[in-house]
Image (tube, rainbow, N blue to C red; front, side, top):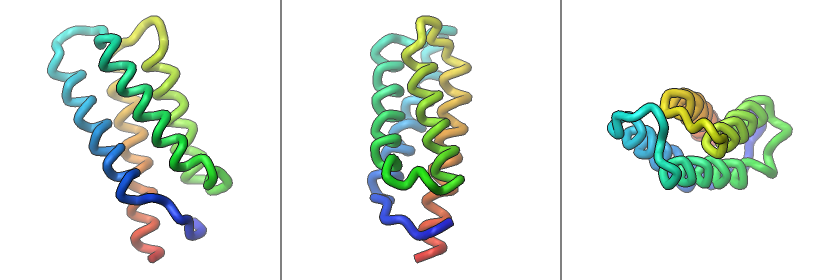
Length: 107
């Protein structure tokens, strides 16, 4: 992975926020997530995409961008299934964690 100039603190905060949203999804007890919660998930995925947009030539970043796009699409779909949103969120959080780890190791 070539060195990037990510805003690692902001990327980390967004990942933490996504984790908090997943906890809310798990705790709501319904199969469908609320529109407010899914809007927040979609917005958070969009913010992650914006942070990574200029670094899309890296394989790990490309995969993370694809996961963020997928999460945004799933969260905005008509069938906002809690389990699917949570699964895609977890994949995105794992990708973000790998980027942060790689960047810290390269520094």
